[in-house]
Image 1 (cartoon, helix red, strand yellow):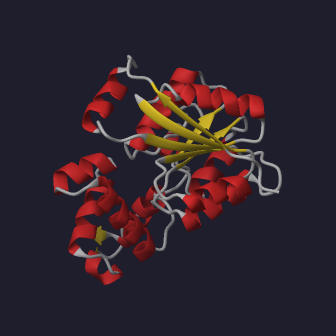
Image 2: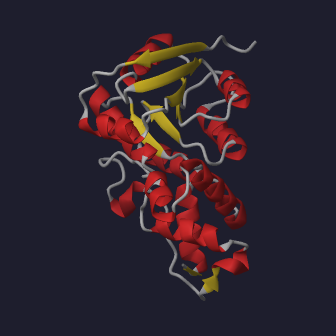
Amino acid sequence: MVAEAKFVIVINAALGDKVAKSDNENRPNTMLKLLVIEDHALVREGLVQTLHQLDARVAVMEAADCESGCTILAQADDFDLVLLDLALPGIDGLTCLNLLRQRHPALPVVIVSAYDDTHTVTRALKAGAAGFVPKAYSGDRLLDALRQVLEGIIFVPEQTLPANHGLGLAVPPAGKDVSASEVGLTGRQTDVLSLMVKGRSNRDIAELLGLSEGTVKIHITAIFKALGVASRTQALVAAARLGLKL
């Protein structure tokens, strides 16, 4: 049986965080839409309360298992971020992550888990997670991590994998230079990938190229498909491996 989803909308016009204020000024008519997939009700409710502080206007939906979460996402395509626990009943978190990457490749998924050992973090990132936040983090640190992810930055707990930015992915030396067109990228997709490689967020890319963030997401999805990857991290590794001329 699909677990009941709970929809929560919070408007907090007095949010004091400078980053959140800046974001709100740039997106005055938008609402940040998040999904929390966590089986423990107490933990889930705590996450939802913390997420209310992420921005001035936040909408949060809750799911107690992967099946419920997938059902919610299938009914709406305007989510900005998913928070996913690993120890879920039925379909486990890593399997759920793979499903989400296949069905919603442009949607960032952040793992929030008590299992934050190097092996687990590495597996999650290689599977396409946009970030990994230990449950031992404070609410403020969680919010900081999620803001980075929303800016298009892969977040990894610094104490877990300090080398190689925590990605656990060795970028192979570039081989023979390959033009972007040879792998099926259009000129505009090449421009987007070039800025991704430079660490630019989706918002930055949109502003620099004169596009909407929605259009940038469409280009990123096409880039993933052309490179045969399912996440931003994997796309950067693939670009380095191919020696793409950008």
